[in-house]
Image (cartoon, rainbow, N blue to C red; front, side, top):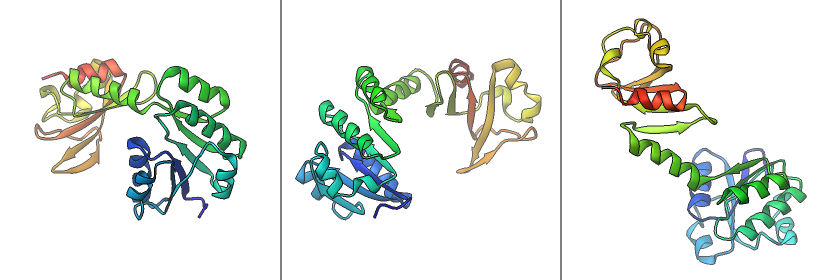
Length: 217
């Protein structure tokens, strides 16, 4: 099974399960590994292969041919020791593209020190995202890097009915309207695009600026 478009996901809790199912939706073959028999049975038929196994044992990972995969995700969250040991074994097996879930900053630092190429913080990132949504009128908020974000929101009055090239949004507000949704269809904007009051817009810029722009009436 270990082909270019195949990923092993270790730990099928909320995060691992959601990730594995999304990979399947995109046409990627997925080997799911978890130590809980009930969880394994719940995913039977949903993933390409799913097995009950202890990912902290090197021999077990070798028997499952995990070393043949180019990408692996350590989605174990409830047992930090198992998470770290599994990531360490994947590195030992020479898997080039490893993603690992961290539940805290110190945990993430240990994974990075081991040499894990991608460390993610699902709970922390979601908490930050929701905090931005709660504070404003944004419909969605995605942080790109330290101080840049994409925001989906309704258009303020000052840009409605005017070609975007004449609104001076960037010099006045420091943001760019990159796309708009009209009648359920997303399109790129141009300087000639005229935004309607019923449209939804996607804006990009520094985090504070896009948040401030989304609050304009």
